[in-house]
Image (spheres, helix red, strand yellow):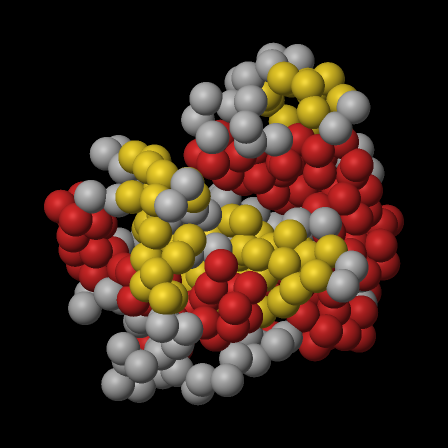
Length: 310
């Protein structure tokens, strides 16, 4: 009887950790559990509030218990020693529990926009380098004209630690290439931490450029979720918690994660990726920028606002 209760408790915390990676949002699922102390310690380490209590585009903070739609900015940040880094990956997620759906927009890192709080027009990924999480959130809000309620930041260097913590992953590669001393053939491939990091970093050889790189980053996260949810990973929980605590930051609290799991978990059944179809690259003063046409940007704004019920 005690074993059965322990297993039920274990499954509960598996779902809670899954919320962290649901917000990395590539498909939901469950992560790994040990004891409450280990889990709470990891989440406490991950918790990093912003300087703002709520978005300036909100009259009041989102109430999870009332099942209000909310948004998240997912950032993959390339942080190296003695370097604040830039947000190589920026993904906006809107979550609506009533429609049981998530909309997911990847913003190209070179997108030209106003950097809110800096007074310049520049590549959107420079906002994080100039002003950290707060400026990045403000800048994406300015581009899309929607509130951003929460963020999840992943240190891209940490992909190596997290992949190794779950014992390696398998992905399906749709584009054969060489990078970082590794060969990545087309088809199903097994990746260690170092190899996974190289897999996510290649950009210039891919005709899809940033879009191909973002796809590979999502594949890595999906692979982490699959391996982390496996029975064998239950014996690796210490390594996994350490890797998450070292490399993931969010302004979500533990209790908020629990509320999301309770009231929003069905939203992961329908994840729609919004693609920028008509954007194009150009050079201004010999610097490459990505431009999103006003008409398409307006359509994206309307789609996200409708999903957030604004």
